[in-house]
Length: 272
Image (cartoon, rainbow, N blue to C red; front, side, top):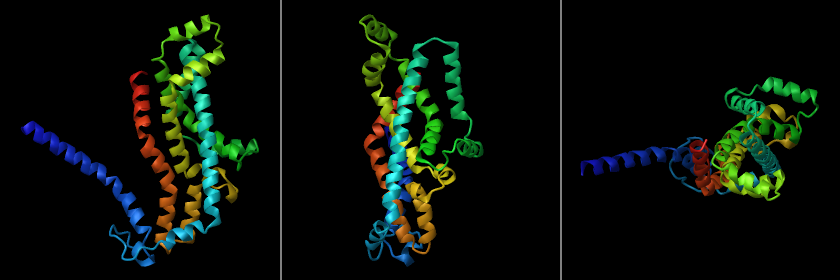
C-alpha cells in the first residue's frame, strides 16, 4: 500500500513538473487577447476584455505571409536535403567495411560536437557569391543538421540484416533499387523523426537568417518577429498574438507526430 501511495505521489510530482512547461505558452496565449495596458503586465489572468483585433492587426501586415512562405520554403528544402543525403550516406557507411567510410562517419560525429563558427561561414559564402540567397541558408542548415541525421540513421540501419541486401542483389536488384525500394521503406520511422527535428530546428532558428540573409524580403518568420517587436514594442498584446501564430504550426506538428520522435530516437539509440 505504501509503495502504491509513493508511486501515485511520484506521478503527481511528475505531472506537476510537466505542467510547468505549459505556463509560458499559457501566458503568451492569454496575453495575446489583452489590450496595451494589461498585456504589459505579463500576467496569467484572463483578459478583462478580449481583444480579437490583435490578430487582425497581425494579418494586416504584408510581411507576415512572406515570412511564412520563406520559412516553409527553407525548412522544406532542408528537410529534403538532410533526409536524402543522410540516408544515402548512412546506407553506404553502414553497408561497406572501409577505413575511409569509418573515418567519414567519425567526421560526422565530430560535427555533433564541434560548434558552428559563423564568421568563416560568412566569409566562405561571400567568396562563393551565394551569401544572402535561399541556397546559402539551405546549405548552411543542411551542413549543421546532417551529422545528427547520419548518426541516427547509421544506428538504425545496423538492425537491418545484410542478408536482405545479398538476397536482393542475387535476384538482380541494383544498388539504387536496393536503396529506394527496400532500405527506404524500412527506415521511414527514423526519417519522420529526422523530418520533425529538422523542421523545428530550422523554423525556430534566429542566428542563421540573421547573419546570412542580407535581403529583408527573404527573412524567415522568426526574423519577422524580431522586426515586429521593434515596431510594436509598446503593444505587447499584438506581439504575443504574433508569437502564437508563429508557434502554432510547429506545435501542432509536434503534438501530432511526437510518437514518431520517441520511436525513432529510441530505435536509433537502442540498435546503434
